[in-house]
Amino acid sequence: MSSVPDYLKKENDNNRLTILAVDTATSTCSVALADPSGTIAELNYFGKQTHAKHLATMVDRLLAQADITLAAVAAFAVDAGPGTFTGLRIGMAAVKGLAAATHKPAVGVSSLDALANQVTGESGQICCMLDARRGEVYAARYTVRDSVVAKLTREEVLAPQSAVAALDGPCLYIGSGAVVYRDLIADQAGKNARFVEEDENHIRAASIARLGLQKLTAGDPGHALELVPNYIRRSDAEYNKMR
Image (cartoon, rainbow, N blue to C red; front, side):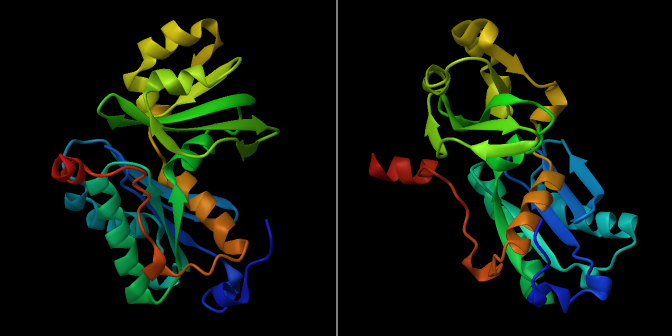
């Protein structure tokens, strides 16, 4: 990892770059604190209530658990999608508000990239899938070698059958889409299909934080006002209007 940029150094005692990350892109809600040495603390919520009911409380609990004040946080990161439209807007609005209130930088991270970086202990091909409903998934393909993740394809929304058909050879499937369409994937890919454990299919804010740190230390200016969700496709309202 490269050295911490000057615009971040001046905000932190002892040049400690602490980042607060938020993920609300899917049915789970996750918040985490991390610095270049690793994850400091993380909280995850797996209930069915809207993330807006819990996110602010979770951030307060996270800071208290880590004994860190909001003023000591150097930057923010948020899952920018793809994911549920409402979920993405909740997380994006929260992080933009925190960044504006503290005058700190904020960066967006791909939810599919986050999933891929949760299995760096693996080796070989990975297909990250999120359930996009309407019989489709948000998907992208990666490889992992010596704990280094490389992205092979662009992110797109497509039928799960098409995502599997594009793959050749053994592949590890991860994400909510892999859970929903597990039987279809297993039938189509046969013995080439492998799956992570059930709880590993959830996006972790710790992964968002790690990738956010990488972007910031690589020189991303972290302009919070420029953050926008990556929906990939039109909303249901837009589809209905077109009809």
